[in-house]
Amino acid sequence: MLTPELHSDAQSIVDPKQFIKFLKGNPDHSEKIDMPMSYVNSLANKIKTLSPIKSLSKVSYISGDRLDVVIDSENSEDSGWVTDEVIKFEDISSVSKVSIHLHQLFTKPRVTHSLLEDESSSVEDFIQEKITTHMAALENKAFLYGDGLSQPKGILSYDISTEGPKNRSIEGVIGGSPGKIKTEKLFELMEKLNSKYLGGASWIMSRNVASYIRTLKDETNGKFLWQNSIAHGIPDTLLGYPVVICDDMSKITEAKAVVLFANLYEGYHIAEKPNISILKDPYNAKPFIEFYATKRVGGDIVNFNAIKALVLK
Image (tube, rainbow, N blue to C red; front, top):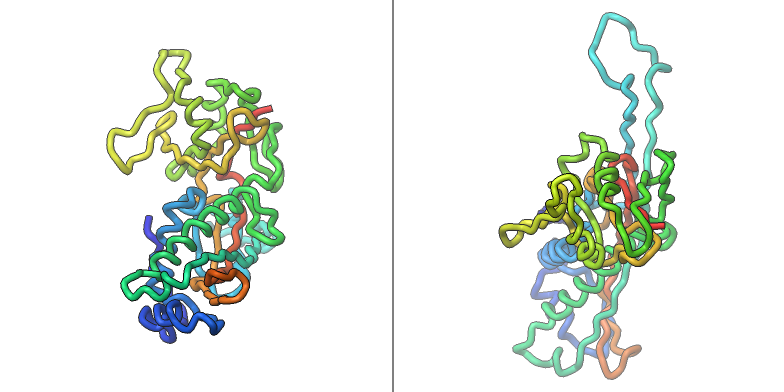
């Protein structure tokens, strides 16, 4: 899924030609500039393809430093059919919200003087590529393990309850011990997710865990649980649901959460500002020119019911 076109006041100030002139300008003069929005749009789409968690989650672009998400109550009394009976205010459940705070993410790509001075070189493409790969890697790891203080609040930074649902905890299943996953536990984990979330559900695991699960068979019919894709661009499936490879997830040998079965579009919300600022620093990384690129991004779970985890103990 492509990122929708982003818009910012910077679009009316910085155009691509001005940006390239800034990159290749006087190397002895420090400056700061916002990346043109045409570049930011391209970069945002590339980051989504490199960040499995971001590609599955809901992303909102905001101008402030915080996004307040209202959490809909799942109380059956909060919806229904209108009757002649008067509904009292106290009969309606109180709403809650999650505040997603933005944090500053930075990366410092470096280039040589010769690259900047070469008229035929595309230094802007080189810097975009470096920013994309570095930010995508940092974001994805934070969306899983971030502490919520200096970075997004990660999914697996929350407690995992293997004894039934608990408030602000991810419901989980003990799937076996390090090095071994029991086949029936994958079925059990899948059954934990409410049917209304199954439409957008995916399995999320590392390549290491995927290699193990590929060998598992259904004990009732002897067929493999894993089904390989029949076409490029279509993901493999496990028990009928797509598998997303995320190598920031734990390995099969670790006593941790090794598999998520989740609808992250419903469960995890990412907020960020739609601009990237770049500062040129010719002094602190000599003989190179350093470009200090920053953006503001945050994330948090907004629906624990849409996320389930398989834990090895």
